[in-house]
Image 1: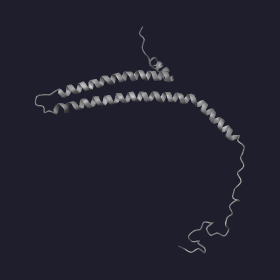
Image 2: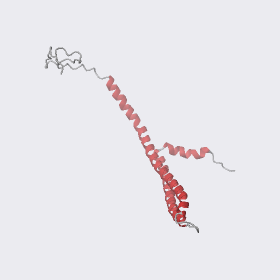
Image 3: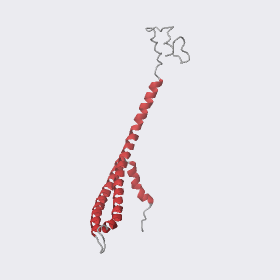
Image 4: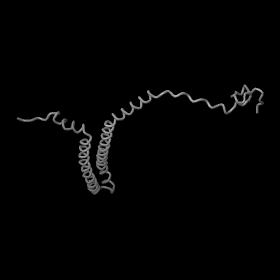
Length: 161
């Protein structure tokens, strides 16, 4: 009797990892370690390939022909290394975001409780009577030309400058 793996067999352990921030971080850290090892191997391969390809000369070559032939291979390896580095950085960033999400979810009930408490206090606050105006100390000049705003067409008895 053979046992075939179903998609459920594959996704069940990952479902548990996705539900726990600690397991999520540990799993992504293990993937990141593997990728960092692959990155080191690719860097070594890149330097060794560069040395070999640039040292390979064919009869009739000029001094730059080997370098020109090596450039596409070097560029391809450099691109792959860039993708590996971006992937490891993305895994680290994802781990931090997952932990921040878990912290936010855990603190959300407390925040909601505080917000509801503040809202209840705001509703039950007694009405404050408006403060009396304090204009009694400064008497206004009733017939002063400068007291009221005027337009340039309503200069009255003032002379234009």
